[in-house]
Length: 451
Image 1 (cartoon, rainbow, N blue to C red):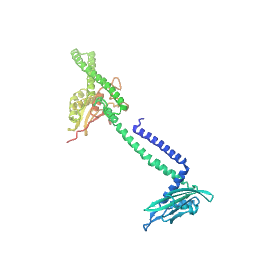
Image 2: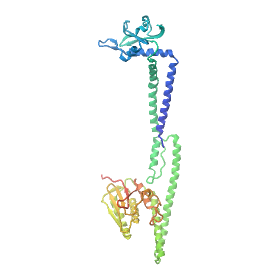
Image 3: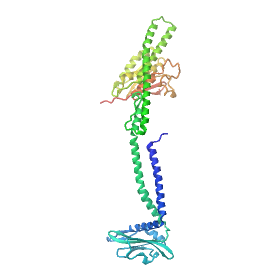
Image 4: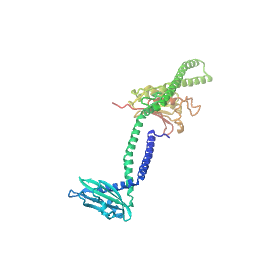
């Protein structure tokens, strides 16, 4: 099962980012755990920040202390553990909670610095008191906070804040940007490979075997692409040599067979001579089909060339009608004139002749073979023959394939030639069962739209 390289890299980056995040969390946790005193002071500083957010202008424009319910809840739930006091610039208390937790003289210290912390012993226990000067709306205030123990786990908020600052804020955007840059970079780097894959898909009878493009190819895969191009070049040379040999051999055999056929025709008739004539006719047909197959393999259709499909079909049916009559069969045409399509008229006529000849061969005496030209560039040949089983339909277009060795003297090349011509036109030969018995062979050409 194939896997996207971009997806693989992004997954690995996510894994690395997750590991780095866990390591960062562990580092922050270990750093603060190693300094419990500093962690306690951070707790006090964090609570002072929360209380400072409650200093807001009132309706009269003066700054007032209005803490929300969620802030006061901690002090109401744990009066023996947490306390605070807020003073304005003149030393007047404008907000307090559980002030008895700390002696009055320790809440405010004369000439105290802007920020201070102190551990005091009161009522037989240790209380950490912290105070800091804050500025709100241009006015100076002093906020003090005291904690005896930590029943509400306020230290967790400190941990969460530090993790948010050191992990979420600093690491996560960097990781996201890294993954986006990586995905874009990989896609841009592999674009040349996509072009090479498109070129490989287009290689075929109508385009030939062409070398894959190497421009802009990453160095890591350039060697592989060059090796593939070398293999394609050798394969193309071998195929070209095979086609040339087949065409040359078929062409060289046509003249001797024609001479031999002419000489035998002058001999007196007889049962044995008739059999020889039949064999020579079959051999001549095979040679002609081999030459046609070689020509079909090298067929390249001009994309701008077009023809009247109805006229092509009319010409083929008219030329093959005597053959059908001689076999005691009927050949009919159903077409509307002016059905223009893109394609080579000679190649299309050659394909249609092979289809008609194949249909006549498998049709019974006095049966009709119908050639139909439909709207939209469709060309069909319908017969009343024995039909083709579904499992054999993909095989009939292979060269020299025959269901039986004695298939009515066929060479096994006719439908293969039709398929090669269809591929050169950007289509394929479709085969389906005909209602009432028989087979329908159809080709769909690109219609020429009127200007």
